[in-house]
Image (tube, rainbow over all chains, first blue to last red; front, side):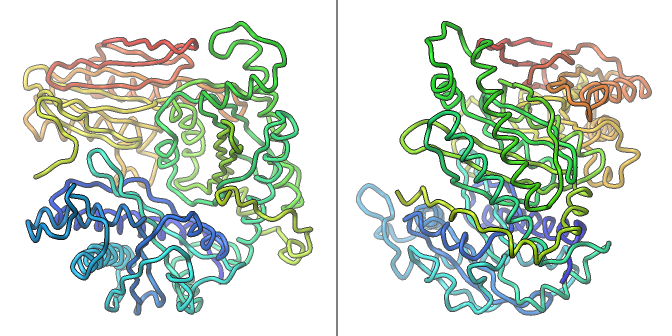
Length: 422
Length: 173
């Protein structure tokens, strides 16, 4: 089974189109104005999907079985609270039985009626997605009767699905946001296709030689090693105990990248890197975290407003060492050499820091693989978002050159740390 | 239709995301956040109070395959699409004026050449010139990010940027 950027681009358009249709139908049903927000296509291992479920928030989902152009399962998962709010809006709109809500008007439990309303919402959204996919693929996909699922753990949602990925298997995850005027209804959309059905779909969509699906494992290993190196160097340099909270490989259209950066002033360090692959690397901190880092790294009291000479050079130094660690992690997995530029300091609105990079890459490519990583500290402000955006053709080349057997033999480093459980 | 969070008398600005363009009229505000090297193109017809905002990221749409699908992504195709949609709504081509903001060069990377912001600025100016649309005000270049808010009814383009010390600068174009 092989895939290429064209095939992934089609999947991305499917996700986007599906979210648009799902948003439209939700608007129609609830009479609340909505629009499709950020859409991401992720590759995740089975164990990470399971880990996502272990954040102790209750979740509800609606699962359907697909047949036709795609065989497998499609599962929409909401946080339980979000699902309740949607159902509440829905029932208010249809002006039905007030008895479903408590005295303060808040819906707290799913009963038969609200359960069926939630299933209806999930089903309409599922159908929106699947109709969107069918449009993009110009084909027919049949959908089974929806199943309502409620629970805390991944087992409830996936364990009886044969196609669900085992610990080490990679799965495709569509992550979408539907926005109302002031709030966002986030949900995750998992697609577990049968391997054979996926293979024939990819075969059909592929426009170039592409890369072996199994080499995507190299991606994952790159993301893992890069993130670990960064957390390690950050801890060594600042004395702040840090760990990797999120690391995810997204495939997105370039213009989505600035949209997902927080809309506030951030402190950052940017690099260009050159080698196989070449690309750009950004470390972004919120102002509070940046201040803590300066305090930790500059021993004496500094009397300067904002980020002056001392503060800037401390942040740049940290960025520089984290960048070396990150890219060394990649180079080790890919068995190549990657050099990086001197750091560029930035203190500005988040999106403004990212758009130059997106523009430069946009001359040649429409989509990008983004290695999203978030590093956090326990009990202290140290939130660092890392965006690593390699040049697409370089990355494809690097992966193609990769010897998958060698990855298997590469030493497995420390287990992915579970900071959310503490 | 019920819309969440809207208060009477305080219209929510319409967000124009990167690569998007929107045409509107009257008191509606169109807003683009966090422009770095992107260029915001505001066109308006003072007589009919019809105008539009595009948040463009690349210079040359004529050379790109997907500019039909995403005209707002490129400076040249965005200007033409804005003009066409404004005229369709009743604006008169000959009275349309333009304002530009953005196109900063935030980083000095070797791979950026002359600067990605500069390329966008040049393309937007060239297309306006070609179509004979007068450019009446600009806030371009530099190395700071900008957030813009455009009101087609008055033609006012508010440009916000932040200084290094955290203070905000607002310029009205």
